[in-house]
Length: 334
Image (tube, rainbow, N blue to C red; front, side):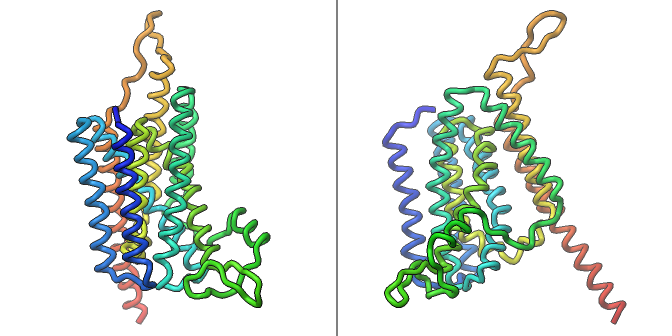
């Protein structure tokens, strides 16, 4: 895939402009967005991502277009799982509703910068050591097993990571929020506020999620440009998605199983790709034959879409059934 430097520049300018719209148009005046506002802007960000995908399709062809859409859908679905942790962080730090947009946006910006670094490091590793695919594949399979074991449960309490504990130890911190300020001065001494702490929490949490998502998308495409753009567009709409699905997250009870299936599938795809890349043949009747055929982009995209559809429909059916059972039990006891 030949991507000219000017295309990279234009893409980065567009992404920065989208961030600027968020900073200037949405979070400058603290407010809790309505469901309608969140829905409109979520749809707008998805539309931008889809339009970009069709541009890739038209300019570079169906293979790369399919790789981008597979990567974007995977990153978007993994980001929904991230929202469970974001909800816990917001609740744990008691972030005022009107300031949650700012917290999310700055945390997402931090994550975007750090993920970009991860992406280029990952691309360099793949370029120089083809056997890294074995490690990526094994890690994703292990992650898939962990997701499946988690089942329908999610953590109900948030535990601060080492970065936050170190920050609290080094810098004096106020007990209460000071509007939307991250730093304040009390009696001539500077303090950081919980606002900065929670932003670090969001950013560092998303960085940990990148450990799963970056290998996953490299299993769908090895084109650095597509990996970067799929990650960027999935992150840019995360703030609006948070407020849109905030009250619906608990209904996605089978999400872990769906993500486990997707990550396991991509892990197997990476291992098969590694067999081809490292030219490992199978033996058949004493003759070297080609390894297991690689999984095509369209098969990957179809698998991801089908799994997410089944997961969503099964989750909604389960929650509706549980609600009816609870209502009937309540009416009988009354």
